[in-house]
Image (tube, rainbow, N blue to C red; front, side):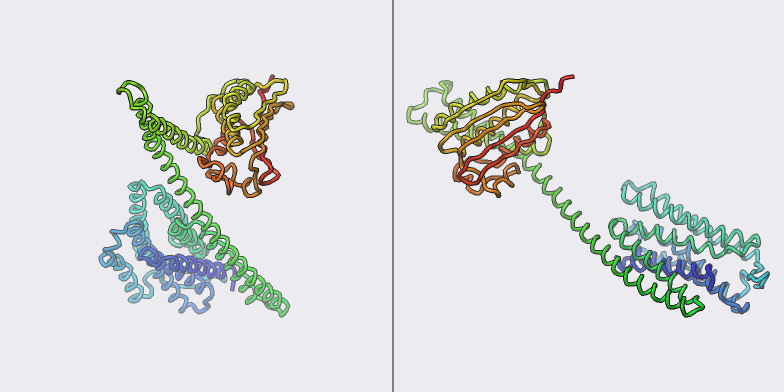
Length: 529
């Protein structure tokens, strides 16, 4: 067996393997027609392999007729494939379209009736087989082949121009490009050159059939792109096994046979292990992709919920707040003294409701990076002082010692003073709400190019589990609602989003539950040129 014959057998085997993998994936009409197309291409390659191996010239003529009959089926089933690919309606009329095989049946009848229909004589010349063609019939065969190929491309190009689906256009690009390479080289080496008397390179045409088979296989399985990794691995392993097996057959010494046999056994073992590993990886990646799609869907649902809260819930709370506020004025008459406490309670509750919803919305916006900022040159020191003074009454009403210490220095930075102030207020609120007694000490200082803010309280403290949840959406300590029933779990998410948007960082430290907490913020100072 020479190298030409080996390559033809390998090509036919790989083509059949690809066809089998596609057919196992989904046995619909498109894949079945594709498999028949591949079968004819493989028979063409196998027929040529036997042409090179056969020594009897009389039998060689029958082999030539066989591979030309196989070659004649290739454009027929390629046209059939082009008619039903991506065309579900077209697949319903398969019985009518089966009439397409009539020209192939006529060609088959011609070869059966006259064994010299294409080839007049087969002879040997300088150790190689050569033929004398029946030129007129050969031109008919060539025209037959070319017409069906052109009709197929007309259909595929028309389909490409009419579809707006990006995925379908990409599929058609692979089919058109890959098959064009295969048909072009196949016709050059197996139709054109033989007509001009060059029969030496006919083995090359079938080798390019792999381009046709692989491009269609890739296109059909394109919606499972990760599976192509498995297919390619299997093909490469299969090719390697075939080559080593051929080497084993061609070995002339016992030593070569032992080496080739051992190498084949090792590669089969390693190949199976590699294929199983790739399949496992593919499954894991598909699971990850599924999880990513589920996460994306969940995020979209959350965004939809936030949109609803912003336009409906927040709006309703706002309207209710305005109603209570108006009723407490004299614009609608003097309210009875007995009603005023109820109205004031209603106003307070709706204000809390508005703040509650606003807290969640701003936290979600800051976390997703969609919160807008007005970045200007600011002095961070007065921002901290202003927020501290506004929270002082609230802390002292709870009987807490509330202190602020600011080191001398430059606290200029680039930032949004409104959102930074809101984030500091959240941190102070958090410490006040979770500190029943004791003190809260706020310290502002700077070191080099970094501004440091520290808020230390003697509150409930944090467990290790609390620390992992603290700056995440809905993250609360396990006992937080016992201390602060109004906790949304989004306040610290907002703080983290704002601080990180200012290229800073925020974190919490605690020795454990009951030992208080320390919240620390670092922000970059304004760079001076």
